Amino acid sequence: MTREITVSVIKADIGGFVGHGQVHPEVVARVRAHLEEEGPRRGLIDLHVTSVGDDIVCVVTHRRGPDDAAVHGLAWEAFLAGTEVARRLKLYGAGQDLLSDSFSGNVRGLGPGVAEMTFVERPSEPIVVLMADKTEPGAWNLPLYRIFADPFNTPGLVIDPKLHAGFRFDILDLHTDRRISLFTPEESYDALVFLGATSRYAIQAVHSRALGTVAAACSTQRLSRIAGRYVGKDDPVALLRCQNGLPAVGEVLEPFATPHLVAGWMRGSHAGPLMPVALADATPSRFDGPPRVAAIGFQLAEGRLVGPRDLFGDVAFDGARREALEMAAYLRRMGPFQPHRLPLDEMEYTTLPEVAARLAGRWSVSG
Ligand code: F6R
Ligand code: MG
Ligand code: MG
Image (tube, rainbow, N blue to C red):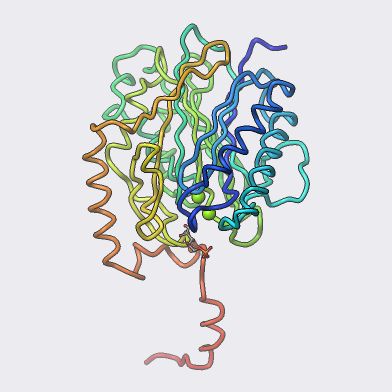
């Protein structure tokens, strides 16, 4: 047994209630019951199951390391058990993210999203889990850049000696599956060349240069690429360690006070503001949105998850919610026009091939 703790956040959309808006409470209960029944035997120390929109999120702790077959297999079985309930209730899109009929080793590439970190638990270890619905992994690029590289968001970068040395960003090219590591602050302009292109590049992990340890991990699955056809948005999760040489909890939450536009609203084909919400409000309804982010915080105690605290359930984020709703109303007026509608190659739904083929003979050379 290693001294290191692994926190694994594993999520999937295994059926929506009603439509794509929420997870049915019976599904959450079934997934939780499976983890509780089987978890101790598979080495789980603790677990927490919650949901955001139509995505169910399992937070588990253990000492088995990353990509562990027993832990990932357990989550997979729990999702299968939840899918049985979803099928019985005829929930919408039951089992949609379980893309393979059989589990083989770990859930990466199978459909569920995973953000996982392995580290030696510090004397006090506050962690935050960010969970978004109706968007994609690149939605974390802007807030994570602000948390780890922007001193106007994170004053610790300027005034805390341990943050002052900067961070290493591991960035994934979602088209080629290649990865690059860039170091801030000195390579921050280079990093932004990629991070600003949110449909193609996504942050996989962030490491502290001073502490030599992982600070953040994100889920970077793209279901549309895994399946070869559209089966739902990727709806990412991220896991962050906080305080004492890492960004403060408040520095982690601060970027969400200014809602940014993300891809993934209605039919995965529209841009909309990412609205920070308490868990009770993580139920997208207007135009199937707008996209939402919820945040839960825990203190780790020898792997025990002490919590959660519902971190956006704070009146201090009311202004951001109001602003997001104004942005949403403004964008909705644009209807099917860009930039509310996504560029052609980013839409999850398109009638273009059929329409283009049918009208092919109607085009003529202009002029
Ligand atoms: C799903 C989502 C929704 C659906 C829309 C159409 O997360 O964003 O907006 O894309 O409700 O869903 P289908 O095609 O399943 O009827
Ligand atoms: Mg869904
Ligand atoms: Mg979803």
